[in-house]
Image (cartoon, rainbow, N blue to C red; front, side):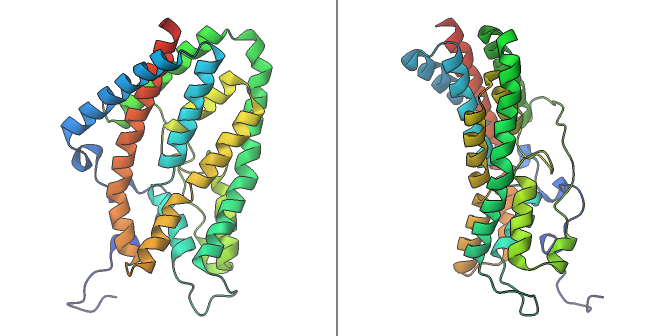
Length: 286
């Protein structure tokens, strides 16, 4: 019970519910001005067309470049949700004296990255291997066209212009582990769970384009490399949290700020997808 007159606990300092808790974040329209949401994708599309005109990639090269771009976007945008903040809270928060084990935020960050890599890289390789089986029956031109259309639609979805299906497991990471295991083990296990990408809440639509592109490209080595990149990208919120707390900030304050950052990253990712779609489309006609 809260003492009369005492300040209410910050909502983000409390245990997060089972879903992504999107109500804790502002909407895209609240976080990003309308003119920015219009200008960014137009600029990204122009850059995509210009890049295609200069590089002049054809067929498989254009698809591979687009998939690498989707991997970069996924690495940047995949983990700024409240689920990602759950990880940051475990990795960056000071260890309570009564908890077992001895660890530091930097060590826990390393364990988290290792767990994510150990499950993420094999997942990417497996997706690429499955695509390799189907590649002989899918014409490259059709593959690029399908990927371009899906990238455009999900780019508009990220910008809030349309709604697209977002299949996922809408669950947070298991909270009970934080109370029963040593912090380094929790960091490692959380990394192993988030590594494949589809076992928890999928924050960015770029993930769908990454998976689709790897299926169409049919390259296991590319899949392993890009999922490794995404695993490293998933550490960015924890790195930011460590730097924030070392500068004297608090975790509740960090989490509140990241709710706004999350929406801005979402808009950048949406514009990026439209830019990649423009790149792929221009590569097919130039």
